[in-house]
Image (cartoon, rainbow, N blue to C red; front, side):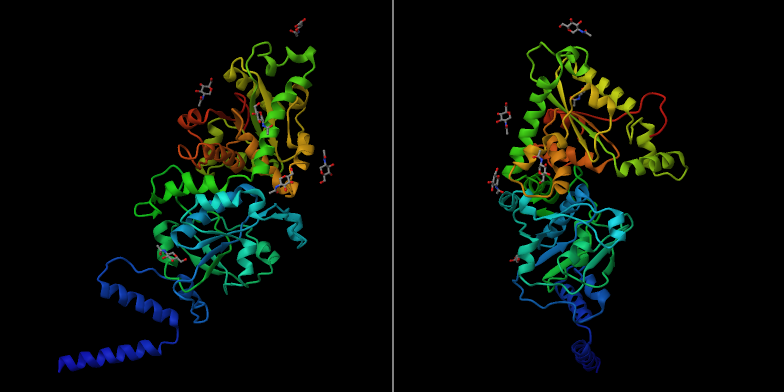
Length: 476
Ligand SMILES: *[C@@H]1O[C@H](CO)[C@@H](O)[C@H](O)[C@H]1NC(C)=O
Ligand SMILES: *[C@@H]1O[C@H](CO)[C@@H](O)[C@H](O)[C@H]1NC(C)=O
Ligand SMILES: *[C@@H]1O[C@H](CO)[C@@H](O)[C@H](O)[C@H]1NC(C)=O
Ligand SMILES: *[C@@H]1O[C@H](CO)[C@@H](O)[C@H](O)[C@H]1NC(C)=O
Ligand SMILES: *[C@@H]1O[C@H](CO)[C@@H](O)[C@H](O)[C@H]1NC(C)=O
Ligand SMILES: *[C@@H]1O[C@H](CO)[C@@H](O)[C@H](O)[C@H]1NC(C)=O
């Protein structure tokens, strides 16, 4: 009797399952049953987009062997786009999907967005970075450029928006997808508590029937920091996942094309040489920069990062935050350590004197990475510093067709990564990425980083300091 009742229940269950309206629910149930039959205690992988969209039409049923893709929109400025690229490479590796490399984009102003006419120059990834080298270096991950991907005609039906506690959702834009004529309507929001290989696989690993997962942003959507322990159980190829990401994939992904690499070395060489020819002899012994004249030491490049523009607005806000009780810990700590956010001429002079002491009698030449015309009277008078403006002719004849606005921040970072001495801004992501590019040069030893520890600086042969306020000077 009991046996008959059980058989009846089973038949009923099968009938129910086959009648279920939403295949999303069905798939989820099957996944649970499959897992249960296999006797595995691990949680099955889910496909949160299906569950949340509660729609049968969302997936795009595809053969099991078909190549699957991960596409995302790069948000914000240059440095943040590179940060998101690392996240996207990690996500694509975790989900075994081909990474679609988006274009590199310039930064439109708020005013342009308000007028509905953002002016964001764009460049294909391969115009700037060496795609063939990247493809070899990121194996087993596969790469495709956005335009080649679009030519396949694959389109997801919804764009996904992952959210989490620490995620920067402010001012996300859709102009990139729009510029590619991809209009996907409101994004499907997917809340995640963390962004680890485990949580990503758990939330999206069951989406293999979606050929494309497209994300509105992957900025801040990855918790695993460079230099930490690789998450247990995450392997890519035969390497621990994080070793693969930061020591193998990132050096390959961010290797410049040969023409860009040549330009960087030309600017480096020229900055060193012009310094000797431009300095009036009467001044030569009066400047700290030339304290080594007469010795037969080669000149060494010092990179000064002077962040202007948006920092003229942001730094006073940080300073106010540091004084308030509710201020974030890192903001307070940066100011308490004496670091400077926006440098006055006096602060610049003070820091260069300190740099000269550190460099002892070495002869230095200065390259200033800046996002605004150089206004510092002190720098302009005392040292014939090099900025990108001074080497426009070289840039014009480099064979690079990329817009100057788009190229400038990358070029600044790459030239600074050739310097032996650096004064950077502790508040700036740009400065962090300049260190990242230094780490990439010693790929297997250091790899991708956001700051260089003393031992790493010694390995890379560089000496880095952050802009410091003068003793007793107010927060700024
Ligand atoms: C990754 O995806 C490819 C199809 O693109 C498939 O052939 C391969 O078996 C998958 N690898 C793993 C580890 O799932
Ligand atoms: C830069 O200078 C170095 C050493 O003087 C030289 O070997 C190299 O070819 C130069 N590079 C360029 C691009 O001018
Ligand atoms: C600079 O050097 C010249 C000779 O090399 C010397 O005559 C002059 O006094 C020096 N100037 C200063 C300010 O030390
Ligand atoms: C940078 O220079 C200072 C002063 O010479 C020295 O104390 C410090 O150890 C140097 N840092 C590295 C990483 O070499
Ligand atoms: C570089 O090219 C831009 C236009 O592409 C031009 O306006 C500028 O004058 C050029 N500068 C030099 C120094 O050749
Ligand atoms: C590199 O620059 C040269 C001119 O300097 C140009 O002829 C060539 O097309 C460029 N190469 C690429 C791949 O853009």
